[in-house]
Amino acid sequence: MRETLIALSSCQYPADFFRYRCGYESLGAIASLFADARYRDMHRVMLLAGDSIYSDPTAGFLDAVDPHERFTQQYFTLRNSWAWKLIDSNESLFSIDDHELVDNWAPLDPSHPNKKRSEQLQKTRKDGRDAFFKGMNISAHSPYNIYFEKKLNGLPIFVMDTRTERDHRNVSNIHDANLISGKQFKALEDWINHCVLQDKDKSGLEIPPKFILSGSMMTPRLKSVSERWSQHASGAACLRSDGWDGFPKTQHQVLAKILESGLQRVVFLSGDAHIPCFCNMTVSDGQRSVSMASVHGSALNAPLPFANAIAEDFTHRETFELASDKNSNALTVTTDTQFPEVGDGFSVIKIAEADLQYTAEVSFAGRLNNYIPDEYQTIVDMTAPRLA
Image (cartoon, rainbow, N blue to C red):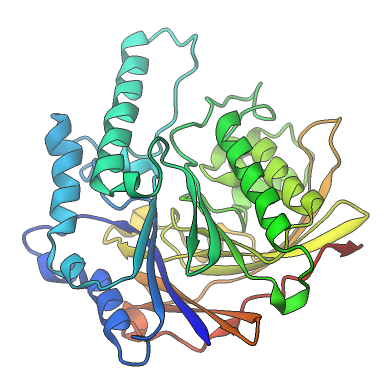
């Protein structure tokens, strides 16, 4: 049997002088999980879905200005923390999000009159990206980009950049704004096509799970989006979201590509919202449908309650229509989400391959359950696209 153990999380708010030990408690718990004798023979993977550092811990009040102190020094501090040094993983992969730059980073409209502000945002983007690339050793996986594909013990994963390539959004362009560049989408398309080719002549549980890691959450959607979406509004409600549901064009493109290609057993992994959840989703175009899953990790250390999402912010169950434009096929998306209450911590995913068949399970560990994963749930049986 070949087994893989994934610890998924994000959002390591810096531990200050008074909370140095407990500020890294979740990372320490990951180290303990990986050191547990029950898991030592597994392939152990740590995934951080963004906000591995906070370059803006005081929201601009006392934040460092010098790029070295603001970015590079933060990565040095993280990697030299007591907990990070204890983590004995076979692999570690990281995606970028806003706090590697600045809270909710997004570009200004190119025609914005404040050119100085626009230039400052672009400089923050460049400094933050460069520091992330070096500080998290992305060059070991990709020589040029901070998005890339990889194999985790034979399991395909695509690590996305859903932060630094996004378009400026406003009411007039919300249906045209892109979350990622055309170049990144092409790389994702190529990865999907390659995965489909690798799965040729396989069926059912013979097909391995595939993972797509991003800071932004694919599903569930925010209520502030979904409640207005159902009223056939202009789409302006999407401006209320910083995640995938705030960019309906890109959300549609990616889900449509997965459905149309016939890719099976897809799991989206994310972490920006500081709340653990597990969402089963079905996507249909009226002729075919496919099941996927979305797993959102807890924050590692999120001591500021007002900055954390709560379950009531999201739709637990909904069915909605998603269309990119009038020339594309509309998708019907159905979601069913659970929100375990575990506090700061991480999600745990176990994948086992036995007799050429794969099983995948998910659980959640955090301060409220002493970092002991609750009962594992089978990730939805993500079968092949079928007639709706």
